[in-house]
Image (cartoon, rainbow, N blue to C red; front, side, top):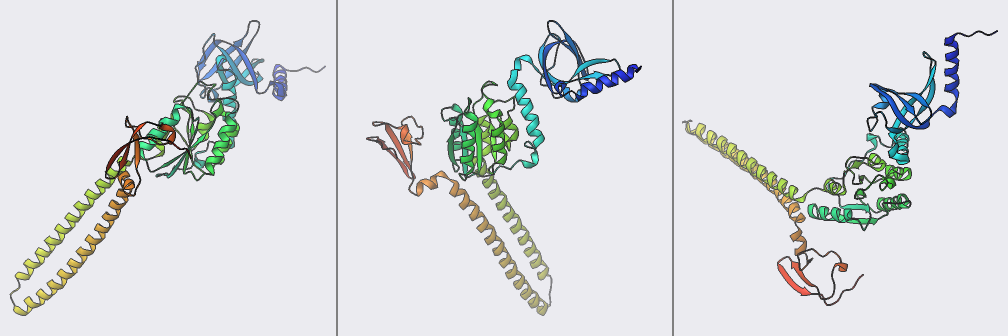
Length: 396
C-alpha cells in the first residue's frame, strides 16, 4: 500500500498540471466575480454553469489597458496550475482584455510581445531624421484628406523640399501588401525620410498597420520612417517599429521639415550678434591705441620719443592689419550666410526665369489638372504679374 501525504499529492498534481501543454497559454472567456485588487488581482471567472478561481500577478496587471470589475465579461490568457497549499487548481492570468475588444486586440497584444522580443522596438535601432530633407516620401491613400493636409503644411513650412507621393491602400485585406510595396519603392527612390500613415479610423480600420510583414519592412528600411496613423491615444505596430511616431499626419508634416521663417529669423539674429561683436572689438582696440598714445606723450627725451613713435607706428600698422583681417573674415562669413539665406528666398527662383501661377481665387496651381479651358489665371514673375485666360491644356 502506497500511502501519500497531502503535500505529496498536491505536489504531484501540480507537476501533472505543469507538464500538460493543453493547459498552457489558453484563452478563457468568462464573467468576473469576487474581484479583489491587492496589487495582485484575485477574482473568479464564471459562466452560466461553472467557475474557476484566477489570479493575475502585479507584473502582468501593470500592462492592462483597463480596470477589471465584477460582472464584466473578459477574455483571459494564461495557464492552469495547482495552488499546492490549498489543493485547488486555478488560472494564472498573464493578459486579459474586455470581451468586446475581440480577436483583433488579442492578436495585437500577441504580435506586440513577439516583435518586442525580437528587438523590433529597440531604441538603439531608431534612425535619426534629417534636419533639412531634400526629398520626402509620403505613403498614404491618394484620395484621403490626410495627403492634402501634409502637402499644404510642408509646402508652407519648407518649400525647398521635394514631395514624392507613393499611393497605397490603407484599409482592407490587401492594404498591408500595398503598403509594403510603397515602402520598397520609396526606400529605393532616394528619399531622405518617409511618412507612412492615414487619417485615423476605428480599431478595425487600422488593422493594416498592425501587420507583421509591414513591421519587418519598416524595420529593415535604410530610410528613416515616421508613422502617422492619426490615432492620438492608441498605438499601432507601425507606430512602435517606426523611427518616430506622430499622432496625426499633420503633426508628421510639422516634424519632418523645419520652418523656413524660423531659419530666416535665426540668420537675422546671428547677423545682429556678429555686428555687435565687431563693434565691441573695435572699441577695445581704439581704447588700447589711445592708452598707448597717452603713455608716449609722457616721455620727454627726444630720442626716446622717436623710438617710441616708431614702435607705435609699427604697432599701429600691425593693429590696423589685424583689424582689417578680422573685419574681412567676418564680412566674408556674413556675406556667405546672407548669400545662403538669399538662395532660400523663393523670389530668387523667380529671378532665374521661373514663374508661379495662381487661380482667380489666389490658390496656387501645381498641376495642369487643376485648370480648365477658359479659366482666368495670374502669372507671377520676379518683377510683376500678368493675367491670362487658359485657351487649351496639354497633359504630359
